[in-house]
Figure 1 (cartoon, rainbow, N blue to C red):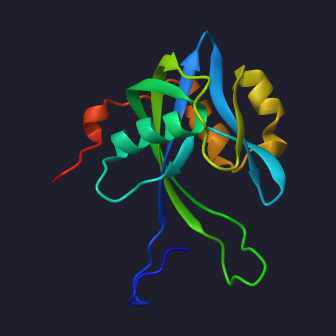
Figure 2: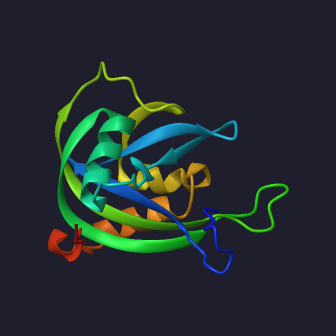
Length: 160
């Protein structure tokens, strides 16, 4: 868990995820986490100085090799993971999920460390693999997007 210098303040990990849809399929990545091969959307941490929208586009490219155009804000999600051995509590994640359409793919691009490959799943196939999802956030964002939960990107503002 990200901890402030002042222990009175709690800070979650801020992450972004992108639900990229094309031809009825969802773009996912298969990645190694603690020795397990898990499924996730292209997702990752917000970096200093970037907007949530920039982070979503960057993470999608870095993890999948796909350049995308964000089309909507799907939602925000707060989730706490199970504690790891030796930790008093799990990590807290505040995820901002976006819908996107694919523009171009660079199959020669080196993907982020731990990412084995980017792959496309039908929603039914993705749901059938729930036991391999990195977290419950994976299916929730896809289900919300498929259910029509899409909001204007203008709801997500970056004030500089």
